[in-house]
Length: 394
Image (cartoon, rainbow, N blue to C red; front, side):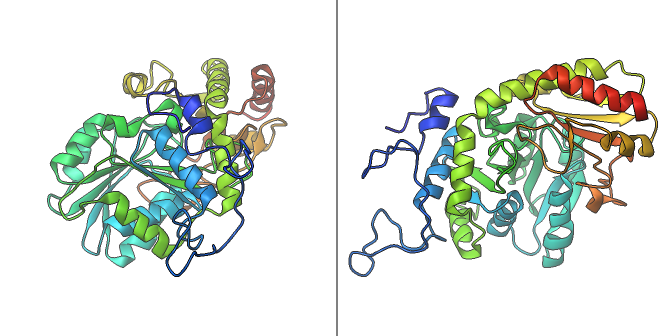
């Protein structure tokens, strides 16, 4: 049976929404690769299934698991992280509304607000979300409907105090959305800290194997805001109306990935700490960004709201932009590529890759920045490979 909320994280990850198949006893949720369903008379839906854009049993299993892992009321699975974010915005904002977005947001998120939402009449302001007063100042009373947060942020690994920002947002009648992709539901529980909605790119740690693209949205239980009495119902309506849903095979891949999320995240964190310990004193490195470092400005907050500090590390190269580019191309085990959160370690140059879309804006990242997605290989091999690249080109 589906485990109750007080069961441990891994128990929920393996069992929530995933009953053995009633017909065969299969212990793994089947891939229901189907578009439509036989009706027992007009409107006689079996299990509520009519058409797979509206609902699919494999996707239902994933959505129930996602909600259980975040401690939420309702989960939704999408074709990509941005499809989920777009559905949240379209569900909750109308022309004339305003959102506050982070000053170090993921480039794709900022591009969406700046070049998709804004031309449709939805305004936004940029604020350093680690600064509570900066967020308070950016809110337009009566107009701001969403405060958007990433913590840790991409790629500078900034930390936002979720509980403090939730209080500020709610005092202004706004909802707080937290992108929990970097931390994962294993390391951080934003809804328990006062957030109203959590988003993920399930392409990353949730899937965990670089073989699927997907997104997730989870709403808190019993969220009510004036004029938006049931957030989950609004998102469910728009998920179906817009149609950017996760297909059954993609949902199955993410569901499989979630089963090992806890054990993978422990290894990601172990390896990241080993890499950081080596890089912290390296002469080719100007600065290391990692919330586990005591000198990180968000260390105390991260220690309070995260189980561990994650598998993402960013560094500034003392040799400048060309050194950063050369190091990215010189590793053997670290693969030069976009994305993150897979079992394999990835290295990239954000200014030219994942964050090229924010060049020339308030969110522009340093040209000598390198982002590391630390995988689950042997830590000594990762350190040696990175060290060789830094010594040759740093």
